[in-house]
Length: 105
Image 1 (tube, rainbow, N blue to C red):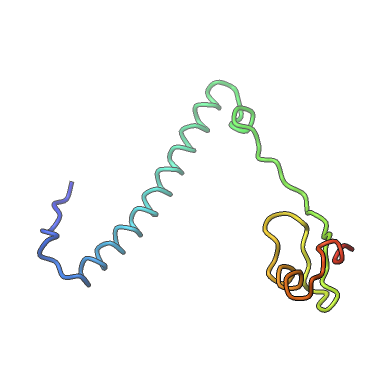
Image 2: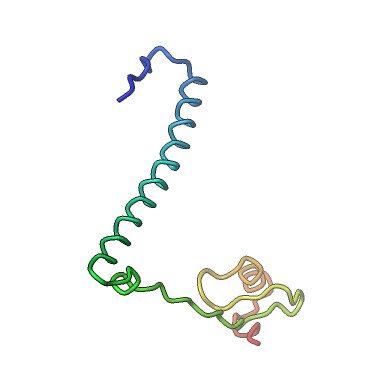
């Protein structure tokens, strides 16, 4: 392992630069090791007569969710009803006293 400089003697700017280099290197190394591991798993499965997808399974694709709510004042504002209520709807329900159901398509 390479020897690190005495970190206590480095300036703040130098420490930030070193941290940036380390973060970039960690991302690169992680990607390399993931690719190598994936290749090893692929080869091991092939040796046993399997496909890797047969063992792990394929990720299922999620379908597009239909829009359930639309802003009558701005039709480009839409919401599927999943997740957090969008800001435009929250503002409308709070300020104008409109109910969520009033935006149903």
